[in-house]
Length: 629
Image 1 (cartoon, rainbow, N blue to C red):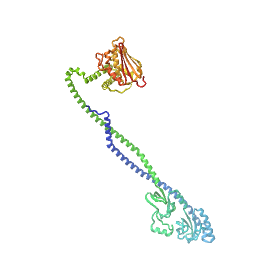
Image 2 (cartoon, one colour):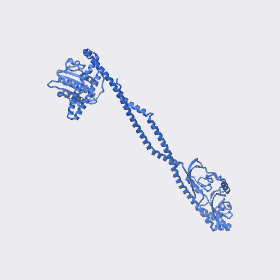
Image 3 (cartoon, rainbow, N blue to C red):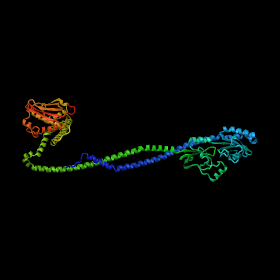
Image 4 (cartoon, rainbow, N blue to C red):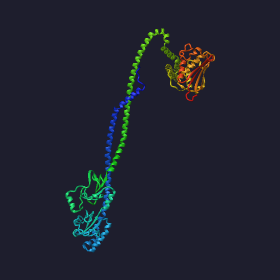
């Protein structure tokens, strides 16, 4: 028995091999390495983008923060410059000098009223004048309950430095009003004979409100790092660093800030960014801790510094997100290209592996087939030797074995093959001879057409063999729509070589062109070859031979009639017409009509015969295909 692989086993085995190679094999490891490298690259890109985004955001915030802080310093200077000129001008005023040199009630009242008028246009809180001992003799708030008139300010640095240096500025908490402000003073008279001091107190409530409305913390510290002005009221008189003990004692004894605790601000510096900036964590009133960029810039013409806090989280987070998104957008095409390259490489390797597997399978099948053929050849040679040794004995008992059922069937099949393939073989021989002639004439195109006809006839011989097998099995082949025109033309073509010069007796009804029946073209051609051959042989030698082929639709069937004007069929033959080995011909085998009847029956039809002295008519009934009838 030959050991052939099934037709579908090869691609299935190849698919299983590829599946095994990709499942848990190098391909999985390659993708695992690719995924690990891709994850590492994405992580590095995200980290680097985060660092870059944070750095760029900090640089942008620092630049913008310095700009905003300098604007606020300029505004602070503008607020300070206007009242600074007032003490100087008043120190030269005649009314001030008269009130100090001649401290009468009239002079003092006139000065009080003058100061009351001036304070409204000087952007100052209070303007007052002290004598050389520090006693306030006149004030713009002389009519208010908290009037400064009569209070002694000799302990204040703005008085002592004003007497000694001619002018002074000092920020302190008012001893009477308990409100913080900047005291600007100027001496009246010469240093050798000072008469008193003119003092302008400036408060920053409006400026603090403007800063608070901006939403970002702003504060001003003095040279001791004490907060003087702030957009957050609770930060006033707190410090940016813990004060040394001696400085803290001196400030408390001077009553500069009253009883303020002077504790450090709720700010923790994390790292320095630039010479004027640092990242801090600050706790604002009513909220949690947050990170800020602190900008410190000096306030010109003062020993103060302005601090400006810029929130970090929104801007830095947005910059980091944008940088990471850009990094991912830049990295994604690279990773996609790498994945595509890896996939194409794996497909190429898989194709190579599949080709190698296919070659191995093919070699194995060739080896198996070669071994099977060798064994078959050996067995055949042994059988031939045995057949030759018994040939003489078989001839002696041939008639008895013919009667045996098994050899009768073998004889029928062999006879059927000889009978049915006689016409195709004869036609093949004719086409082959013609091809030789055309090749000799160098008419290659016509020779190729003959060879194509020979190839088609070999297929017909295969179909005839299948029909003989079907005859033995009584099986039924599948039916399909077939045009009667092609069937009849094919049958005539096969008869042309044998009945050359006699086919003029064959008269075919043109109506065949419009009929389509159910069947198989090759098998139906076999039927009409038998019928046409029998009819042409029946009219051979007659002076007016006629074989008429007609078609018509009757009772839902297509009836093809083959009528000849021969002598008719003998009664003894007519009774066994469709039985095997029943023939009126000297060399006939009596199988043609048997096979034809079986073919027509397979497709749901039948064959009817009418005969007489004037000829015989075979009527083939076939099922129509659709509405062909």
